[in-house]
Length: 165
Image 1 (tube, rainbow, N blue to C red):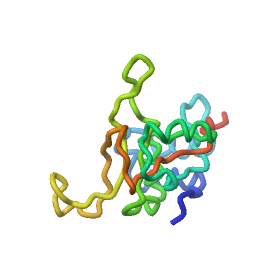
Image 2: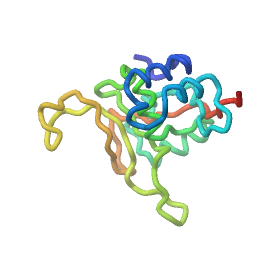
Image 3: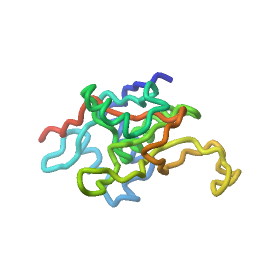
Image 4: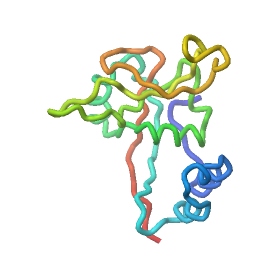
């Protein structure tokens, strides 16, 4: 698996979300998903392009990775963007090739960020996870000052609003 992936077309993404039952969970009609994929007026939907898992930043701390991404002209993925990516390309998450979503760190006041950093990884099925969850995707958090050899920092080239219809 390469660290950078090309997602399916917006129409294919909408159909995948519909097939996964996301309209039932969110209360958004399948027609709205299809309309958004075709270019939705008065929408807060947007497209994230050129997603990278950030493998080259493995063993960096979130506090080190964020300035590096910004200096490189990239934007860190949010947790919801990371989950959306994996709904469409589950193979982007591999054991020992997982990622943090530092775009979702909460402000802590005075220009600082909360030390908890959202991440998505493959569970080993130990501790509270339980052996039945071995190899299952997991959403959780890590401390911002810690380094992990198996966690990169997912990012995108840019976010672009969907054009009006």
